[in-house]
Amino acid sequence: MIVKILSSELARKIGKELDLKIEGEITIEELKKEIVRRFPNAKDEFSDKYFYNFSVNGRLIKQNELKTFKLKNEDFVIIMPSIAGG
Image (cartoon, rainbow, N blue to C red):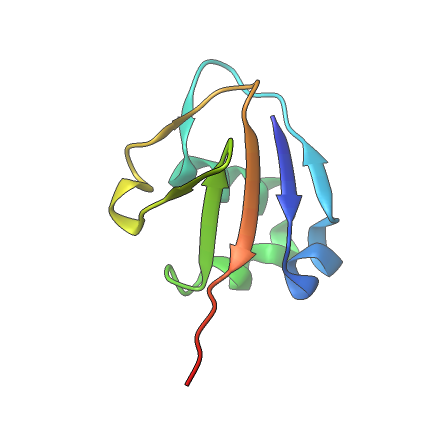
């Protein structure tokens, strides 16, 4: 699975693009845990569960789907910071 990082801070810690191989399927929550396992210095990045949004194959994944949406090796994932304006 290709994971692109669109956050400068997270990208600084783990790189702008990862090519992860997984066994079977995993959820986005499990993907976050796998990233932290491989890159312990990124743990703080995922402390706020609403800070990052995830897109899979061009589809924005809703927050209530992060524990159920299944990822496969052939997926293209983008991790991007939430955008707020005022």
